[in-house]
Image (cartoon, one colour):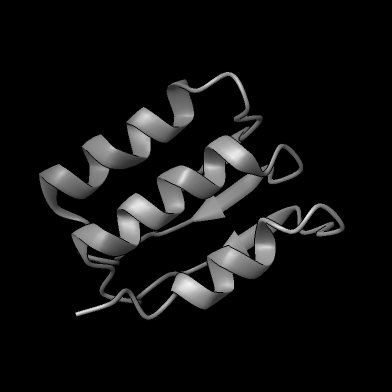
Length: 80
């Protein structure tokens, strides 16, 4: 099943995207969604805050987000 936030992440990768904060609380994010978000963290240097509280990420989802945070392109300052 494709990630429901795939199109959102794809749009945010556009070079003109000025988004600085993304709130996805209570979204029941799957592992594929976490992979999309991890890629977004690496490719969207303007994103400073990501809120995924109460989204049932699971261990694998958290690991994927951590991988995205480790990339040189990530400038995220706040992760909730």
